Image (cartoon, rainbow over the protein chains, first blue to last red):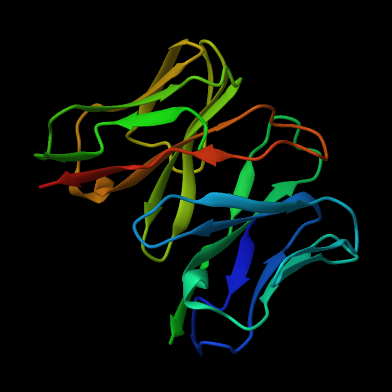
Amino acid sequence: GQQVMQIPQYQHVQEGEDFTTYCNSSTTLSNIQWYKQRPGGHPVFLIQLVKSGEVKKQKRLTFQFGEAKKNSSLHITATQTTDVGTYFCAGRLLGRSQGNLIFGKGTKLSVKP
Amino acid sequence: DAGITQSPRHKVTETGTPVTLRCHQTENHRYMYWYRQDPGHGLRLIHYSYGVKDTDKGEVSDGYSVSRSKTEDFLLTLESATSSQTSVYFCAISESNHGAGANVLTFGAGSRLTVL
């Protein structure tokens, strides 16, 4: 079935280094959402991208949606220990009026102080 | 966070016993979902509801049933629990579920189920 692939599965960085996670879909997406889950917590919504080529920023986080609406990325500049957690992308399939989100498997980020 | 609560938060049960997890929301959102989260698999949709008594299957629905008799409550039942159903279960809600600008999911705190 349709899949949303997310890489890498794990990323270990030194505090202050940058971090990027990538999300790719085999089919065109209506929109894509990003969630963060802290260790032991629940996923929390970060942002939604809808338009082709859209770029949004939240402080040190930059989110991009590809021109073909099949891929997306989340980039964190100068990571901090508070960025630790698992980042999930979730793509909504085009044309699915009562469909649902397809989650990537997540990228688990650890930050060494 | 929005008013969404899950109960129980932790449960240990034995293979073959029935288990019901409850999700309760105070947001009056139309859509409710049950996901399970397992290492290496991310979040997988079990069932979802788009209104009272209106439910549909997700990608991993086998062995699970759901019911929604009131807007605020969405129950997930394991008729006969198996060890493969050991997982963390998350309930989520959303205001709408369609359109290019579909609303986002708000998750509950999760219910950790262990089936021995």
